Length: 247
Figure (cartoon, rainbow, N blue to C red):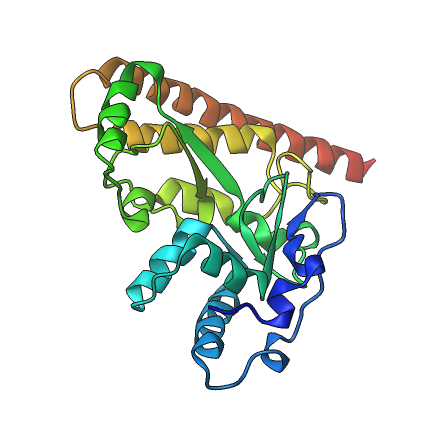
């Protein structure tokens, strides 16, 4: 793939945006690529993904393109993403590709696209080591639906993509924060920790060997305690707000 002018300019190569900076403006890439060419078709396919939703993990983009019969090298995929997207170098959307011109810090609806993570507990890392050594990989969709246990020690996941009723219910509740926090985004730290624990419980539940039982039990107990703690804080804060309004 020969990079077009829009994709190869120095300005557009600087895609990593600090969380406190302005987001890149939308660019009409169609003016710089010959319509009907192979590159134009590829760029249009990637562009349509960001019309579907404004924020994507790279792994999810890759899998969607594979489903369309398109497989690109790391360099070519990055060039295509550069045409329509940018990413933050820090913050609650870090390393996710975001449609140019869209600022998730100004849109509370963006909270469903925030990140969470999962770190494989130390006692279970031999399983990951063995499979990584054999160059085994999972489909991204299988990971997001908690059908398989991760091979990587640490995974960054998008809340929107996770197939879990509790997580989807929580992220769609009205945001409690009026502004987007540089660390926790549109969620409180308590809620984010609770969501992270829920992810851990789901993954530990599908660990394919013995050895995770006690870790799963401990994690499940911690999740239940924190879930009720977050609920209590919400009720307490709500009562405080009502009291202030009446006074």
